[in-house]
Length: 136
Image (cartoon, rainbow, N blue to C red):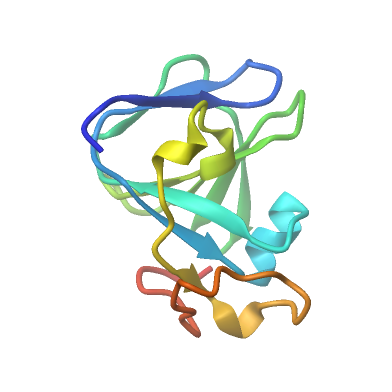
């Protein structure tokens, strides 16, 4: 991906842009399921310096030690996931909040050990028991 990607919440209060290449993964952990209300969350991982809020930042919730999740207080859209104690780190944004989510392609499932047995998976993608990057 070399083009700029844009996205935001359902009501439009919070908008962002991505200017660096990204990767995407489906997360099956309980924390992501509960935060989103879905069986999984597809995250787009953006390297340091490749993400910025173009409007006011959303509200943040510390969902587990050292992890903050961004969401809109007005419409409830889940927007971001980031380790709060580290500077200049990746930020994950929800793929479904992109204006053009079809421009990213997930390459695996993480936290497969937390999967709901009835949750559909993409059979063409590997399922990792944990995470390749961080704790969920």
